[in-house]
Image (cartoon, rainbow over all chains, first blue to last red; front, top):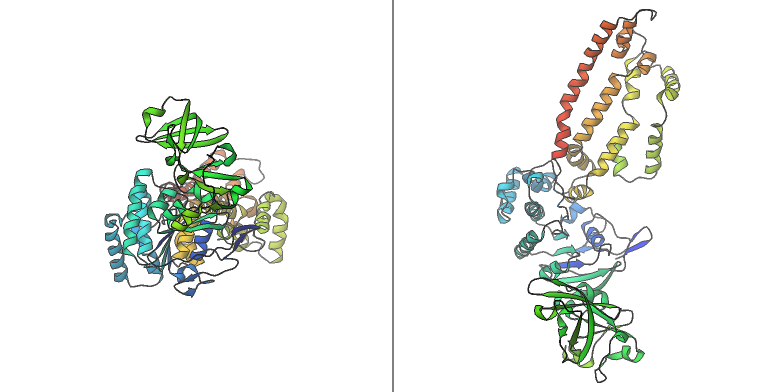
Amino acid sequence: MVKYYRNIKALDDVTLEISDRELFVLLGPSGCGKTTLLRIVSGLVEPDSGSVMIDGREVNGVPPAERNVAMVFQNYALYPHMTVFENIALNMKIRGIRKEIIEERVKRVAQTLQIVELLDKRPGQLSGGQAQRVALARAMVRDPKVYLMDEPLSNLDAKLRVEARAEIKRMKEMIDVPIIYVTHDQVETMSLADRVAIMNRGKVLQEGAPIELYDRPADVFVATFLGNPPMNIIPADHIKLPKNIEVPGPPAKQGTFSIGIRPSKINLGWEGSVRTEITVEFAEVLGDNVLIHGKLGSIPLVISTSDRGKVIGERTLQIIFEPESIYWFDEQGKARYELAKDMSQR
Amino acid sequence: MAGYAFARLRFPGRNLLFYTILSTLMLPFPVVMIAEYVLMVNIGWVNTYQGVIFPSLTSALRVFLMRQYFTTIPEELEEAAKIDGLSTFQIFYRIVIPLAKPAMAATAIFSFIGVWNSFLWPLLVPQSLHMFTVPLAINFFKGAKGTQIYWNQMTAAEVMAMVPTLIIYAIFERYFTQGIALTGIKR
């Protein structure tokens, strides 16, 4: 589908298929179109071209309520003047469902999410984690065809976020419809997603299982977006590669290409296939791990190491890495090349 | 309702219309007074209650105040309501109106004070004594030709005239505090 805002292409020819029981993450920086896509599925926004199919039925032009989708908003969007019970029950009340049935269903969902004792409170009295569970309950009680979640964890503090992630995982086990989940957080993605689509500037760059994207990114954008700290990208003329190293495909012949290497794949020492020296700018001691921010010539480089003793206080470091852990990109970073033997292995 | 339309509904010429209404705020009342009076004469509303009441039933200031408040209500709430199956009108009276109580209370107090104390318009339109507003009545304490002013009685009457305003304020005041306590959304 395609969507324009004024003259800006917010969504550029996006096609995705999401199956039942799947938690599908739309990942990308802000303004990449992921929320627009979610809102198009919800019916709050109509696409300029293309169609939305839910359960085999085209729903273009169908109002949000009749699509039977449930949405969890970033700020939860609970109605502040209603109690938790009324918040969860509103949809059923509007549809004219009998009072006893409403009460029973709200109670059942409240039990599953352990919010029974909150039912008489108002949203203003809830903590962030409780509000999030109420928002999930409001979505679940409707038994929707698809769940839409718009950065549901970004308002929680770090500790609650881990708990809430588990909550969503547990919830996912209980339902048998797809969840479309928008986030810009790659940790959430790695932990929750069955499949993920990475988006930038309205385009889907790559989709697949998160680990697949991590191991075999299609381009520099995907490579640097998944993984923390992000992959180092070094233009090939900034580093001396040994003569006998095998360079894949076209980039070598053109002579201009970049290599990518994950911070954890760089080791300290003198004995390695690729060896170079970096100047240290500063180090972040994170407990077991130390992140060293350095420079290779003018190129910033991050190394993650557990060898605290060797690195603290050093001005320069000798680093080594192996050719197997190198990712090869073309000059613009738009494509990645693989060694012939890697391709045959996979 | 006009304020909500200007805040949220999309229709052609919305901004033009809004700024036109807003610009009337900049005209002082005496400028439009004559034109309004001529209108009242033409439709035969001079010396009638509707002639006194109608012109102040709505005002640009109130539309503006309400619009400003409505734009601060998070749009997600209305989107959530849309997904819950509420129509535009249901969203308005089930979600927006309950949340707008503080603004409505403020607007009500402003309007009441404005109307209660109005002097110039009621001086023009009604001509029978029984239709006069309180400020006009107070004006009588000046005596027939303005030669003599009964200060003691005039100030006493003014204090009496304040009482309804205080009562109205006491009624609506709790909505102000409620408005502050009612923020269910984190920003």
